[in-house]
Image (cartoon, rainbow, N blue to C red; front, side, top):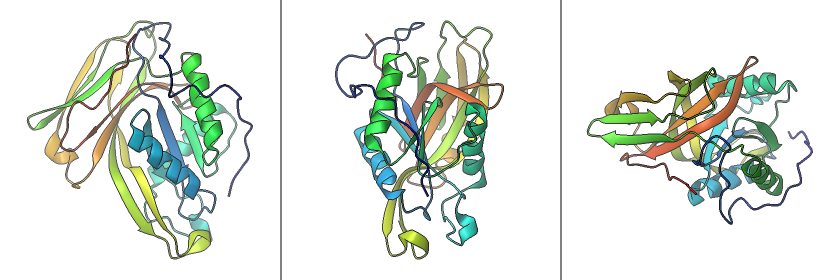
Amino acid sequence: MLRHKAALFVGCALLAGSVTAHAESAYVGRPVVELFTSQGCSSCPPADRLVGRLAEEGRVIALTYPVTLWDYLGWTDTLATRENSERQFAYSQARGDGAIYTPQIVVNGREDVVGNKEADVLRELDRQRATGGFPSVEVDAVRQGGVLHVQVHAAGGYSGKQATIWLGHVLREVPVAIDRGENSGRKIVYHNVVQSLRPIGMWSGKEVEIDLPVNELARDGESACVVLVQLDGKEGPGPIVGAAMASWPLTRANALVRE
C-alpha cells in the first residue's frame, strides 16, 4: 500500500530556533500538512498517529483526507469522500508525476512525502522553512457574534497571481473500529478529518474579508474549520500561501509568527 519516494535530506530545525522571513513579507504562518490516508491501508496507522501529534502540538496545521483509493478491494473507508480523492488526484496532476498512494503527505501544497516516514516529513518541512516555502500571507478566522469573519490580509509580490480561498469543515477527532481488511480488529483515531472543502472567494494580493454564518458551520457539533489560501496553477492546485484554523467555540486561532 506504500510507494517509496526519496527524501530530501536537510537538517530538522522546524521546531527550534527563529523562523526566517519570506522574501516578500516578514510574516511567516504555520505550515500545512495534508495527509491522504485510508482505513484499508496497513501502512497508514503510523502516519495517522503522526498527524495526531502534529495537530496536538499546534505548530503545524495538520489535516487528514480519507480517500477511496482502496475501496475497490472491499475495504470501504467510512470517512472517505470523492472530493478528498479528487484533491489527491489534482495534486498529482499539478506535480506532473501522477503519484497517488497512501499514506501520502503533501506539505504546503508543494511537495509530497511518504506519510509514515516521520523523519522525511520533518526534513521536508525544514527544507521549505529554510527556502521560504512556508505560508507568507496572514489569514484570520475570528468569531464575531453569529458570524465567522475570515480576513485574508494584503501581501506584496502576488500581483497578477490568483488564489482560491478554501473553507474546510473538519472533525477534530474520529475513532473508528475497523472490521475488514489489513487493519481489521484495530481501532484507529483520525485527527482533523476534512469532511468538505469548498471555495468561498478569490484573492490576488489585496485584502479580502468574508463573513459566514456560524450556525451553519457548527451544525455537526464538535468540529473546526480551516481556511486555506491556495494559488491556482495551470495544472491544478498550487502552493498554499496562507492558512488559519478555528475550533468551536470560535476564537482567534491563528498564531502569528513575526520577526
